[in-house]
Length: 237
Ligand code: DX5
Ligand code: ZN
Image (tube, rainbow, N blue to C red; front, side, top):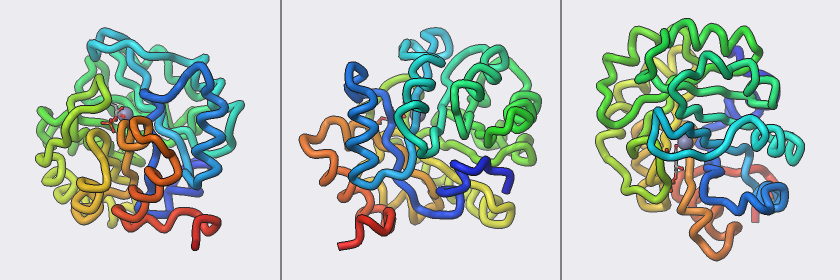
């Protein structure tokens, strides 16, 4: 599996819970990352939005660079932007270990995924709930990871769309046979996590289930327990 060293740490572990850095306190980003690392998260999911591909606008390379300075844990960068091809090198240089683009953009996914791999990052392809899996399947040979969205990309705090489970189940054989990662993102919480794992999710992205809780440690542990994620050894009781 061509995962870069940092991401390889979690590429061989399943399931893994990754906090979505969208609803966190960006005024104290390094502290937020430190607190989450201390309670055992094994990587971070960074949601980049441009206000064009999705109606929301979040952040770009400077925040990825700041996160890179704050942790050696893998950075899983989710590009919800209209022209990702223009920014792949900049996000790789900013410290992204995994770069995921959306199959819905007007650029050739195979070219984007190949370019991400050439930059030394793992290549991910994301699809929104409304996008049929047959839009993704032609590009699987170029994917190290497929990100199945269980909410329409753009905002945290939306309800989990169970249709995502069918997509996970349909991709599970491919992921196992090719040693690739299936990731689910949106509405993941202790209630939805078990089904996501049962249908094949390796990485589970959680935003509001962590950042809308009043205690990161208990929120992360509840997610790890629900997902059957071992978490790192230091979490063992
Ligand atoms: C949505 C983002 C998700 C979202 C997850 O476009 O890609 O990562 O922030 O947040 P929750 O877990 O609250 O749905
Ligand atoms: Zn995301």
